[in-house]
Length: 623
Image (cartoon, rainbow, N blue to C red; front, side, top):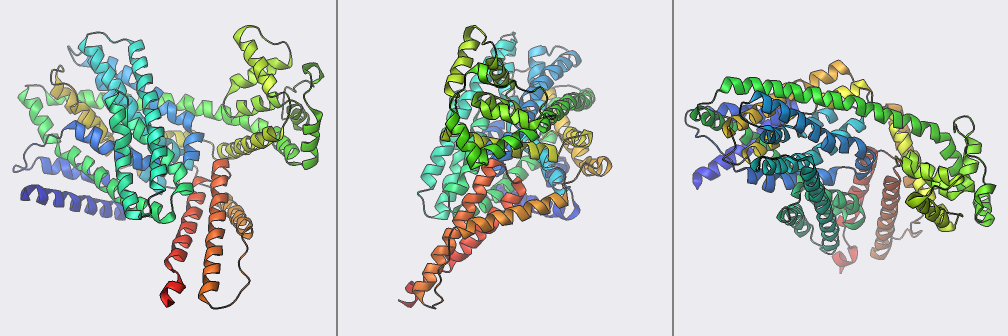
């Protein structure tokens, strides 16, 4: 027992030292911990370490992913969901299949099923690079994409691994079965995560003690992941969804004291758990090599296969990211072309006289509507006139800009001949529902229009070029999840020890090669940094918003120095801070400001509210 305690203390101290050293010299602490673990594993008095993979997959990853998703700005996650989904789902599946073919060819007697299983093991990336990229000051879009990818790709890989193992066991790998398994796993996990996230906030909003509140938060990732896993779904996706729900709603539901307690304690938990993962990853190397030698398998062939697999993962990632960025750029140009029209339409809806005329004109027959201009850039006023005349087309064109082109196509066809069949019924139902503007329609559509215009500013203000794409490719390094997933392979897997060694070498090589040179890559590529002038302008607009929100709550006129007057001022100041917070959260939902600027402003308001609360009630002190 004492030996275990000593080892635990030494591990925590090592994690603390590696973190401090890394911050001082600009090296990611996980890289230091992996190297320390590898060196220590070869000491003669250190026994081989074998960690049960369930401890990592079911015990460590859910709280880590939950903590990261709570901190993930929901606005950025929504905006970059296309890129995040492509990297964390499509790329993982493509990489797994291509790597599976390679492994089946390179490892005699392995077979395609087990090859795809090993491909799924080495496909997911780790979030180690995020901290390095953040410190380099690159575009927030790159950071959001890397953070979002690391939240979901582990779950995709583990679901695919489970399906591939099941298919290999019966000597039949079918795409249909894997697809159904994946969809079931994700849908059930999303439902569980959403329910747990909402119940978490409902319960914790009624708990007044900040310490008890934080203790309850420690159980949330497991309350989401364990039931989901019991039903055959992805516990990791459930934990991520619960974290996203909690992070987006917490500022409106939980007090600043509770959120500050959560943040500080979860940061500590995240540091220790992440450090343990990478330290044990290095410590496992000697035991893995020893098993390969006991099985009379070659270490050097495994090293060559791992090097080729690492190169293949980089090539596949680069081949996927390049067209992904081209697609994002094309969508950005389409949004930019629609900006003048949408701006004119917003001006019309915000003008009281114009809005009143729209409400009074009532529904118009299709033959009375003007033609929709082909190019919105040449005549934005005419384009806005058509959109204002027909709510159905206005909704559809905004949906097209937001990335739902099918709705726009349906609405365009509704201007002329209505198609037959189910699509025609859908179009007619949509027009019947949106034939005329109402107060509710204008309000709801105005909110959506603000968000779409804010999204356009976000995408056009920080376009992703080849420099940012290069960083997205090179930052996709593998980590401890790869090693843990490899050790979850069944004992009767063909050449299991070699497969585990290959997975370890890919993960360790990726961490040391890509992680060790990511800073150099940033200096060579020089991605476009954030615009300081734009940030200053954004902060000025935010301060103006805070001033306007604060003015809605007048302060008392009394200047008396009495406990009653103090309480009046305290209450008014707290109400003013809450009004400012509500204004910031509304702006966050509309996407008016960047996530970093909003987070800083919200932190300042939380600090002010906590400071005022700590001053107490003078009537109690003098009573």
